[in-house]
Amino acid sequence: MAQTEYIVIRAEEDGVNVIGLTRGTDTKFHHSEKLDRGEVMIAQFTEHTSAIKIRGKAEIQTTHGQVFSESKK
Image 1 (cartoon, rainbow, N blue to C red):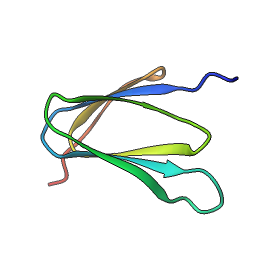
Image 2 (image 1 turned 30 degrees about the vertical axis):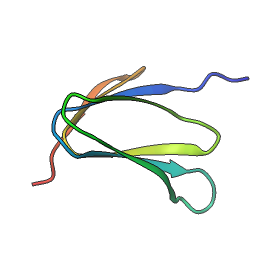
Image 3 (image 1 turned 135 degrees about the horizontal axis):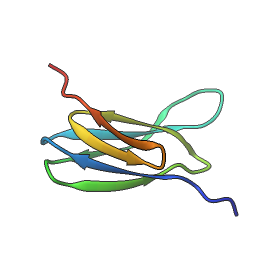
Image 4 (image 1 turned 180 degrees about the vertical axis):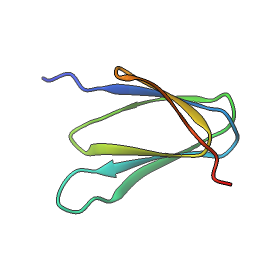
């Protein structure tokens, strides 16, 4: 079994949305979570998840480095 990549998402404000997107010819939402400030979620890319969308202010850590998303204002 191939190893899959994990990412760590830490919400820096209430109401951060984490949305999993499917693989295939039609990309669709298949899962979503809402995080409040300080909550942490560990997400994994799988055979069903090809992308993860993060809406709101959060810190994201991956094997490729650290990035920050911003609030929509």
